[in-house]
Image 1 (tube, rainbow, N blue to C red):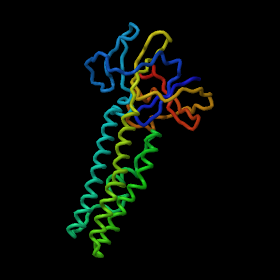
Image 2: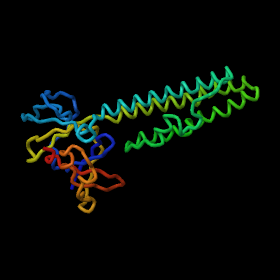
Image 3: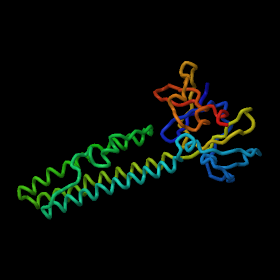
Image 4: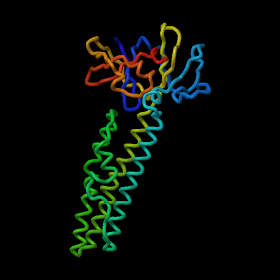
Length: 263
């Protein structure tokens, strides 16, 4: 079987190539139709056939990938500002000989808690996030070191080091936050996948985040998923019906979807 892998949020899904009529860049040019279904974007006249267009991200994740990405971008902005304020607070504590009350453990600040628990299948974003570890720990290590210097009467040296770290380590951390946001935004290249039943006419259009790759899959590389409803809970029943198997090949797993089962 030949399949095409697509990214939808934090998941990789696959369609049998025989179920795919055409793909095109998503231009959001469908005609809106009144609906209570958030995933239903409207109807597009495609190849002379009025074709329903669905956002597969909303159907699978209950939120569009655009919204999820915006939430992640907002979080990264907030955590970047946290560390700017953290260093400002440390500077004030040294200058004023006042208590420093912010987290000195890199695992206990809000970013550290998020960083330790965040999972993504976006390999490029994974590589960016790995680079946060060293400068993030270095920033937090400054507190005890510089407060000790100040306590020992070396305020000027403590402030000098803090200034250097602001222009080096904090600057590095801020560049990483910006790179992470760019990676989040750059990973979203929405495409409409027009599916077909007879190989000639479009049946449905599914908006996905981007095209991953295409590959040949042997039968023994497809694992049948039985009794899926026991495990997935209250997901969209249409999505539940679409999931027919798990493809495991080339070190990558993807969910095999049967598009005609959506309706």
